[in-house]
Length: 232
Image 1 (cartoon, rainbow, N blue to C red):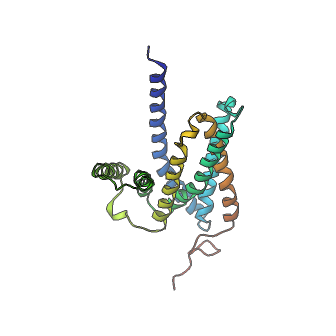
Image 2 (cartoon, rainbow, N blue to C red):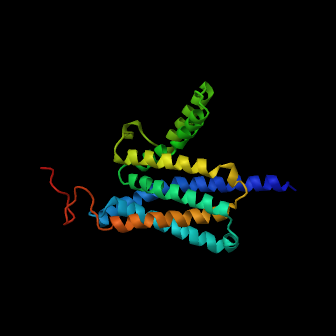
Image 3 (cartoon, one colour):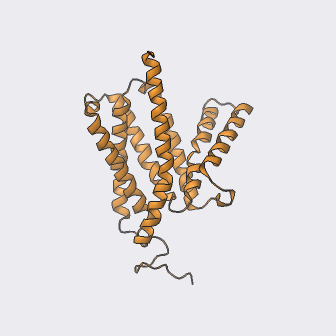
């Protein structure tokens, strides 16, 4: 019989792999949803689409998780409130950029750029410690980026810095901040399910006003009749 620590570690690895799989699948799914939405409602703002998707994803996820683990909402500590709200704010501000960026770039490119935290995190550590990146670190970063590039299916010809790519870079910076906030030692004793529910709820509540504000906006270059305006 395996010790409890090893069993817990094995479960963590399994959940992490499952999460990574779902995370990867979400890129082509959201991209496909964006293209379908554009065909059904070509005049609608891309911000409206991206924010509505985020609101439903996170609020529904929070409700489902709370229903599966209602005890997680009992006795929420101040530290858990702080961590959960912090994660929700960073996610709520960052993820709409990524979702909107998917309307203007390929899913493979978005998936590749979204992993920018693999670069931002070690650079932040070097800057915070006032040290230059070591050769080993630079080589590791290059290998990680190469692997992500190959796995994402991105192509050199599709890598450019347009609106979609820039928005995805912004999202990756907020994701970096999320990881740094998550790993703070002061939150070590917090319950993961509790802070996840709080994060989901805060994210949905933050993005909901964006959906309301952008509901009446129109996609640039599209007239009120739903046809693109002439470039002349």
